[in-house]
Amino acid sequence: MDPVKSLKGTKKTGTTICGVVFKGGVVLGADSKATGGHIVMDKSCMKIHKMTPSIYCGGAGTAADTHHVTAMIGSQLRLLELNTGRPIRVETACVKLKRHLFPYQGHVGAHLILGGCDFTGPHLYNVSNHGSVSPEDFSVMGSGSYAAVGVMESKYKPDMTEEEAINLTIEAITAGIIHDEGSGFFVNYTVIRHIKESPYAEVSHGYHVSRPAPRQKKIKGLFTIPRGETEIMKEIVVDFATQTSEITIDKPHNTPIKPVGYMQ
Image 1: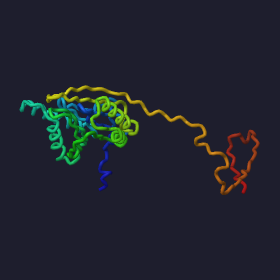
Image 2: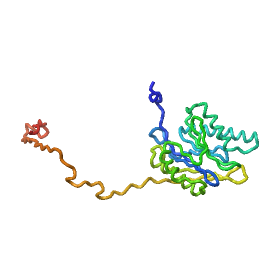
Image 3: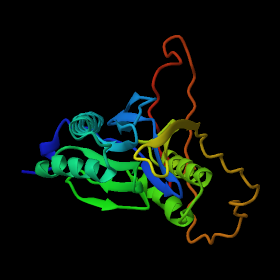
Image 4: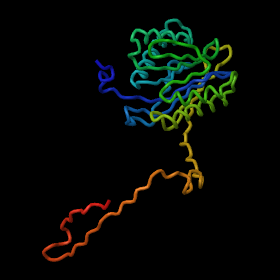
């Protein structure tokens, strides 16, 4: 059976999410366009999900899966925090996510970028939908990642300032918005700042309205080819025959006239 035909009724999704580690914390960013196939479902979709007060997760893929997976794991982390009496580490959230996703072997459409701060410092993890995990300095996921990763790889540098990390996140998401039909509207970003000698973090949220790429001005004569530049290989001249007809009462003007054809 054709695997493509067996997926009848599925919808193509589109998203651009990214995360960057800077000197004092983590920045997570995402676009705000939710699509189902070629239909825009939501223009202001929040794709950065809160898991604990100092740990957030950006989600790409199926919106329902990303929302429910992060909400469920977030509730488990809260119960763990109440039972142990200790703040949750980012690595603990990462283990919870991968242990939940791995048994489904990729059939849960939750592609996640996990970021946060604990007493060991800022952390960023790339969590795929089949349960594999990798720690990263920066990460990009979603259908717009092909454009966004180029910005990240060319402009990322270690020990960035908070302002540089925010600007890089906005630029990367904007590149995904411009070049990917499934990403769009404005950029949401969350800044998680590490507090020294504290298991908690300071969190702030923001957004940036992305403008479309300006149209290139037409340069006069840029693509104008002067007459005579192209060699004429063969020339055929055809004279079409004409026919006149007199309009009378017996033969009105809307009477069809049979074409004569053309003369060789």
